[in-house]
Image 1: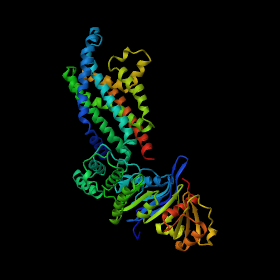
Image 2 (image 1 turned 135 degrees about the horizontal axis):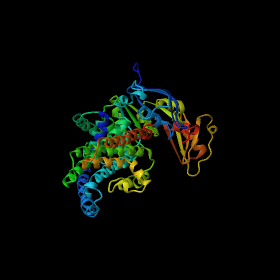
Image 3 (image 1 turned 180 degrees about the horizontal axis):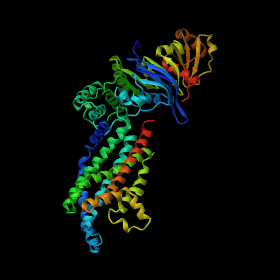
Image 4 (image 1 turned 180 degrees about the vertical axis):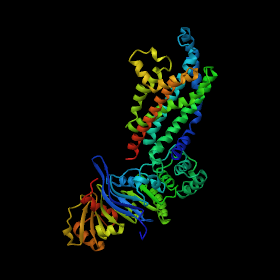
Length: 309
Length: 253
């Protein structure tokens, strides 16, 4: 973040809907050029937080500044400098791909001449230039998502907000989208995204917070969180039938934690290879796989501890 | 206001896809209605000599008024709910510098554009049928717009307030259609039984019809006309206030 003021600053941020507290007093900061993620299950308060940052949902309490301005007073001025990719697409299905970008650009007061040039550039960037003249309706989910991203970039935003950008997309479409987002990140655009996909967070986020029931449960870079909340490696055991009951004590302290899933058992350890012969000898699994810990493991641990969907 | 015009541009862009079809029916409808009611039915009605003018001339401003009302009511119903729920265009707009009031006014401008196009065509057709008696008829155009607005504003509020589109069935069945039939459009409200008559006098449609009829027949006098204008303007003001409230609650919460 350096000496620059943060792009987003939140302290004790609260959002209530009647009796329901969606966001229960959270603190976070996002610096310029950073890629920041909100992780968590549905209902954790991610989208409510995003809507407050996007100035379409007034906060109930606490401090919030976006681009150094107060959303309560300067909503239009802030939104003029934001790009928003909402959870549900808001494209006009009857208009063409190009018209969707031009109409949206007009909301920002950009001239038609300028928008023509920008639409060409953006459609090329999201690899939709060949579909510029076709209606939106028949496009695939991944293409619509990419169009929404192109549209969100029409005002050359300093901050791009993405609410579950790849939910519901097939793996190929997700990778195509990540690819574009990584490009934006490299160009210096600040990204703030929500997701419940751990691989997405690992791919895209420099720093993230894990939210649970309106509060921030953990915060750090993906690597930090893995280091702090999981072991270096994981041994995955699969069994022919029902997995046997396994205790940490079976391995004389070499296993920090055992996670029994319906189809496999995960052994959290700092040295997976050393554990493989022991596991074979004592448990007779059908197959054994050693891998590095991922955010998924962090999430599994937190799930066991506190997150309830 | 410039923000509202940006929202207005969206509606014009989506209207561009369908305008040919609507223009055709907008020209055809007044010709059909005036022929059937004014000329056809009028032959029977005129025998009674009760209205003081040929029935065609009497009913023409009534049809103009009901057209303005129907278009305004329709445009503020499904399209507004659609922009909230189905196309979600209002959400798209509110992610940009536009505010709820801009989104609302942009759509109202569009609804009035539709009312204006239809009213202008109607007035030309009415003139062609020889049913205009006075130069006062030039004021019939803004009067039709005002009548349309007195519907489009509160119905936009209703669209923000309703949870389901089924509510529109009730609106049209118990609100708009009775007003279309019984608000002095086809026959004088004074013919209605007492009790019902007072309800008819309270509708914006009757005020619009009476205002328009005075203008096309040249019988309007200043004070009652200003009264009609003030009454319709109150519906516009109240409607806009309510619409901004329900849309804010629906879109920015």
